Amino acid sequence: MDQPNAQKTPYVPLTAETLAPQLSKVPAIADRVGQDPQDWKVVEVGDGNLNLVFIVEGPDGTVIVKQALPYVRLVGDSWPLPLYRAFYEYHALVREAERDPGAVPQVFHFDEDQALIVMEFLSPHKILRRKLIDGEKVEGLGEFLGRFCARTAFRGSELSMKSAEKKKDVGLFAGNVDIPAITEALVFTDPYYDAKMNHHTAELKPVVADLRANAVLKARVQRMLMKFASNTETMVHGDLHSGSIMSTATESRVIDPEFVQYGPFGFDIGMLTANFLMAYFSQPGHRTPQDLGAYQEWILSVIEETLKAFDAEFLFLWTTERTGMLYPASLFEDQGQSSEDFCRDLLNEIRQDAMAFCGIEMHRRTLSLAHNADFETLTDSAVRAPMEARNLAMGSELILRADAIRSPRALLELARQFNAKDVL
Image (cartoon, rainbow, N blue to C red; front, side, top):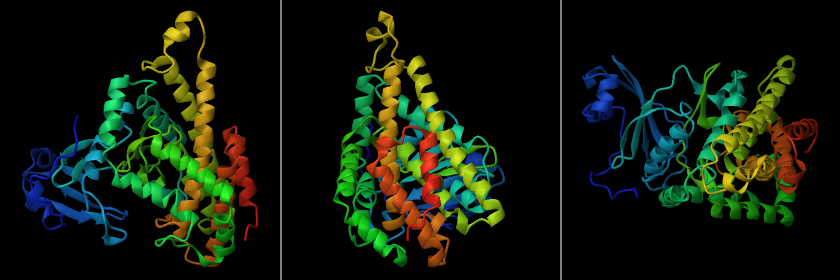
């Protein structure tokens, strides 16, 4: 079984000046960019919380170079992180490419010692979160995302995989300890008490106080943390949001799976839905009154399409690729019995978990360390706070009443109701 190796070559963070001389020696890179590093143009463009990211352009083409840093970039070297996360991101990309071909960037080179991945440069793709802030639409977005979540969920589980292969994979990704620990703290724990790195808009103080005083809600969140930490149903991206999707007007790709682990079926689809809902609630700060209603409804249509596509693709794979140890045909179809109803039962359980994870993510992105640009780019707190308050209130409703959301339409109607509320 592959595992991260002890470093053989000393790790050195790249800079725009040192990258070309160092990586021009790698044929897989030089063949795609150009043989002479003096002809390369290197720009550092990383705007995330953890890594260095470079665009490397030459006479023969362009690639992306992503290198892990030994600390959280958002915080600094006071929060160290292991470099082995690049190892797991690489293996996640390989598996995602197998389970949903064409959905992620192609990987050209991986250097474990230097914690770097060289991959396909996506152009003219743009980070989806920025497109949502700018009021741009993406054709087929919901269909793509629903299929991606369903295919990676189904094909990464023992509904599809042989049990020995699945257990080997679980063992591999179980070594990615420190990165999921960030999720366990920042997502499931920190929002619900006065954690050191928390911050939130001052006007939200009474809403936050009520939220943290709700013991039933906090217990429900902890129950979902138990599922996240202990349930290995499938390989999850682990950080699937509008900042980890790149799109043109007609095409999308999923990036940045370094928070990968084996976890619950409903985790990725729930986190993704939360980020669309936050984009929805933030729109009054980004759109003119004339454009607002139509664009908010488009965002809701993407949520509906994503959830419907997930169910449809999961059911299709259930009927065509159910080759693992779970629900074998020998127990059902081979005896003349349909198993479709049991797939729908499972999808209902997945939806319920997804709604709870969705609500938790809506809380953490407003109260914990890493917030969303959807809200954060609104510099007037008097404008921002009412939107964030609606977001927090709906998040609580989803956590406490996840079982009441029985269809995508019910979720959309709930969003419309909270969008019209004066929570503060």
